[in-house]
Length: 198
Image 1 (cartoon, rainbow, N blue to C red):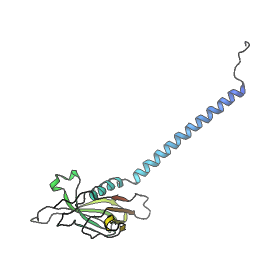
Image 2: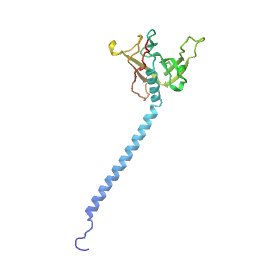
Image 3: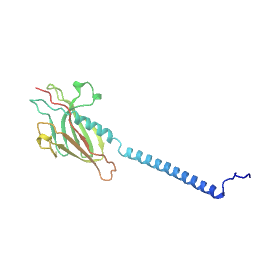
Image 4: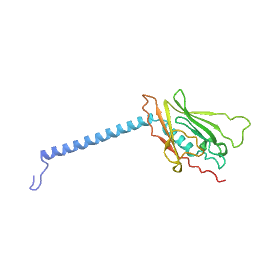
């Protein structure tokens, strides 16, 4: 070897190998963590299967509640476990004039979350309209529904609604049967349609 040239010492090579080993171990642990998180996310999505769609449907129906007219209060009746009102069904249900429906949200003895709806024509029909039933979820122990009083009527959550105006908010909590690991945050939606002027 010429003067001024030198190679790595055994100690430097060992330190470099240790550092490389630590980097590889860290990368492997990061990949393992990412795979575990991905698996957990897939299991959570599978467990909450259908809840996101139910959330969107119920929020949309509440948002589109009919506010009634000056001489005709809105048709809404609610308790802690049942809600009946008139609303507009989603666009997929057909033309605007055929989408107005009276809906009832409740549960049955088979632990199903049900949405019953009947077309609500503007004129008195010659024969009663058929009621359609949609099973939104299974394994539901019960519903907890509450209604927010508008600020000019005192504000606050109450458990029943039989007033001649719409609530400011509707909150729906879905509770599942014992042993069911599905969880979902409360559905909170506000009716946004304005009452037509006289």
